[in-house]
Length: 454
Length: 92
Image (cartoon, rainbow over the protein chains, first blue to last red):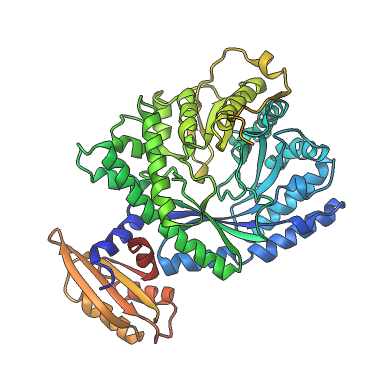
């Protein structure tokens, strides 16, 4: 046979038992031709464009799911940042567009639409400010819309005014969705060095260098990696661990490549990128924390976790880069606390702290993601947490992000429950030492010297 | 080239599994090109089969449904996948 039965059964087992899946097929749609000074007209053009370009996205994904026998868990849409498309200084204009985008997303059957986005890492225009002002109401009055704001970059430094503003926006968004544990904040990401072709929500938008439409694919296989490591002898050294992860990542990535290419062909879109990030879900076994445990750590967050995550992420990249010529997006390890059962347990036991999560982002992971903190955390403290995370991204030439939920009425040790893919999480304590005087200074933290390159 | 598919059948070992699967494939004008069967751990039946469904009037999901229906009373799981999946994953 062309394939041995061992190969076939391995693949079938990965899908059936280890939850190998395509986490998301995200269709990036350019909105450059939808701009209009009349918000109503602008909203209509955007709605029509999403309908026409993404109408077949969900049906094609369902068909491919059957053909290849691999689950495609989510279909989503990412848009050109709306701050570039809606030429208005009025938050009301952005709210009108937000509702239209949400409706269009529902019509085409996707679960999230990203692109309620402004890039203000060096400063805000009046249009940017209108969008940012509209975020709390936009997120609390829609279901699918996702917002993101870039407040820092390696070349420009950190816009501290924007950090402070985002601290307030996050607090306000939590308050407006207090009846659902502040779930609005789960749809809001603050970035340093965001990528233009991210398939993952809530931070996806389609950057200016992208084509008319692009298929962006995120694969997922934490369970497959864990299983492969569990099959190693207990005394296998970390070189062998790395080698095993590499080989496994190769196989996972190839599945994504196949699905991405065929999706693009059938949709008449360009195959954009394959994101190698090992995205977990709350399902048992589908966990990055369990991979760390399989490596020999008692819990994620134990001493050694930073080294283990660096090893993991690097090996995934090496295997993935060989498997696909279209690697892009974030391609880092995700450590979204509420979406990863092992991380939830580690945080609840106190093994995993906010500070350790921050350390992980320095070597690999994408950010402080889906972390619930006490509802009375001051906006200034949220802003300072954002600034710290941005500093790591800026200094290390990498994307970092903050998606944090100050859960209304909750204290450290309580639990929040967002349901579905967003999961549930213990509320983590935040260092209470005041930092408001620092963040209220505002201004811009200058870009770090990068050995004076060009 | 054809439309190559891989059929996998896993479940409780019993008499007549291969016969039922082969019958459905023949009825659907699917040509078996290679077949491999073993018993795992003494009682779990596992069969992998490469076939060409170029002459079949059915789409792959329809064939998958027919096969699953045919063995519905046998505690077996049938998967039918485009062979490209395995070429991508296991061949450089």
